[in-house]
Amino acid sequence: MRTSAVLLISCPDQKGLVATVSDFIFRHGGNILHTDEHTDADSAWFLMRVEFDPVGFDLALGDFTREFTPIAQRFEMEWRLAQPGERKKMAIMVSKYDHCLVDLLYRHKIGELHCEIPLVISNHADNQPIADFYQIPFVVVPVTKENKREAEQKQIALLREHKVDFTVLARYMQVLSNEFVATFPHRIINIHHSFLPAFVGAKPYHQAFQRGVKLIGATSHYVTEVLDDGPIIEQDVVRISHRDSVEDLIQKGRDLEKVVLSRAVRWHIDDRVLLYGNRKTVVFD
Image (cartoon, rainbow, N blue to C red; front, side, top):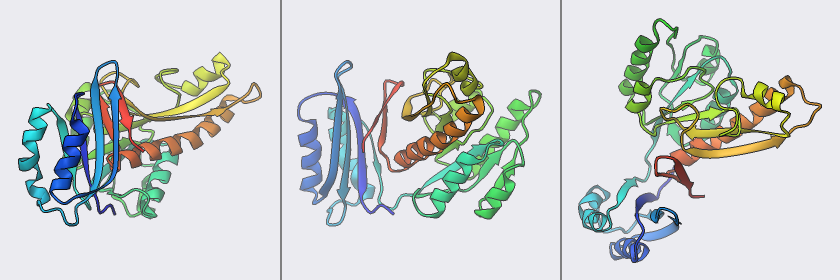
């Protein structure tokens, strides 16, 4: 459980930003543990993550907004403060493939993912035993062409009922509607089984095999209205050869998918990802 507070800042780049933020924390008795900054040269946009120990901080974190707002307004900041001990609520949506689901639930069980998982939603019942093993509520919402909007409304209602902070698509094999995505902007994380922007859409391993590629990859990204085009959080690749069949690509790819998705989820939970320009992310390690 994180005991520090994390301040995330995004704003136009200008002189004095780092000094002003650091001085604010210092003047109130805070001890800065880690600080990371990045300036996008093309857009002159500044991003910053400051992690500080609130022990000895003379300002109640509940009053942080009131005191910090004048600084935020002066520098035109978009910002938020992640509180110590904060545990985000993560829902998982899955279809039949279970490898990403199993990996996430295992990492959660051993304490690697510091969050709550109030439910798993699926359009098939296949993974019910896995959720039962980890004692996570499992809800089946069947999806067909005829009932897709009705099904999505049920899913949205479930996510709202459980006050979910973000949702992970752990190989959920349905394309979410624009309405669904717009309901949870930048709060849905997907794993796509290719190195985007190559091989978007269905059966990317088959597409890769047909092209004779020498590397296959996996990409975790935030979901937007455009299929497989959201801001990328994490990617990785593995080398393949002409000897590999489609089945070999799928097997090797599954290992990548698990690792890439878990990294992206962990960084999101730890407030290490900042978005800007609606297309890019900065991930502070």
